[in-house]
Amino acid sequence: MIFRRALQRELASSAGATFTVLFTVLVTWTLIRVLGSAAGGKVASGDVLALIGFAILSYLPVILTLTTFIAVLAAVTRSYRDSEMVVWFASGMSLRRWIGPVLTFGLPIMALVAVLALVVTPWAAMKRTEFVERFQKREDLKRVAPGQFRESSSSDRVFFVERSTAGATVVQNVFVNSNDGNRNSVVVAKEGVIETDAKGGQYLVLTNGRRYQGTPGQADFQSMEFERYSMRVATKMPVLGADTPINALPTSSLLQVENQYTRAELLSRISAPIVCLVLMLLAIPLGFVNPRAGSSANMILALLIFFTYNNLTKLLEKSVQRGKLDFAMAWWPLHLAAALAVLALFAWRLNVNHRWHPLVLINAWKRRRIVHPPVSAPAKVEAQ
Image (cartoon, rainbow, N blue to C red):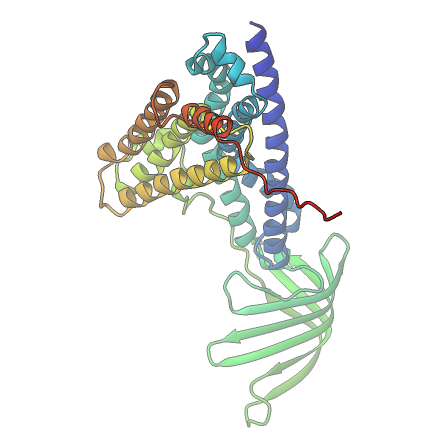
């Protein structure tokens, strides 16, 4: 019980520190990416915080899996480095006794990863798609931001306003470039007001401006001044959910619709908790380290295993999506091979009498150092 409590505290502390670092990196990277999209006019500025939250929820299963893997690996590595495992083995305990406390710590995280992958992540993807579609299909003038050129939803007009007042219904110093087939017109005005007619159509009413139409230097070029000029603007109502991506569909919908795309997405979702469980158990035998050597190589190897495992999972997902592999033959072979590798590594660590076991090699190296101590160079005798 003392060992279990101490190990639980150590695992929780290591997991908390690891998650904090990974979560900070994730938030920073997501913030930069979303702010770049907002600056480019792809998303609304007011939706930045919501989009950051949805993106973080989408990446949480991977972050939690890596956190659990690193936490268990760090705890086992520290026990080897501080020679606690020597005392553990000398007391007649086996490495298998680590499985229970590690599962007690990791199974709730694995369950959380499963809930995130099967329920929360699709919901976050759906909400993000709705926010982006709502901005892209909103009315032309509501997409205009002061000081920025914005294209209309029909892609035939470019708007620019210097500033807006009165709740964005009155704009000042307006520039509108319209392209109607082969004819191009430019309208500049000192002020514009958004008005609605009886049928619900919206118009941009410009005052005190000038309109240029045609190509300068040609015979059909026209220039006119006006005190009041009405321009119909697009009022396209958003039709959300018409083009829902596969990753935004609920898991229940994936089970009802059977095709290569839904099966590939389903494979990705059910692989997340399995990868978390396998890596959690793999960290126990993988945490061996020579107390006299550093532990950086161990951590580098663990990261390589993590990224290789995830990339192989993505490779199988793409194979199912392209129809090269059936779902029934894609979801289990990789995880079975990883589970067998965990069992083989456990058997190797437990077989302490094997001549290639790390402890046997270390003891043999120590005996050679005692039997054949290093010979130091003879000291020079100074002449009297």
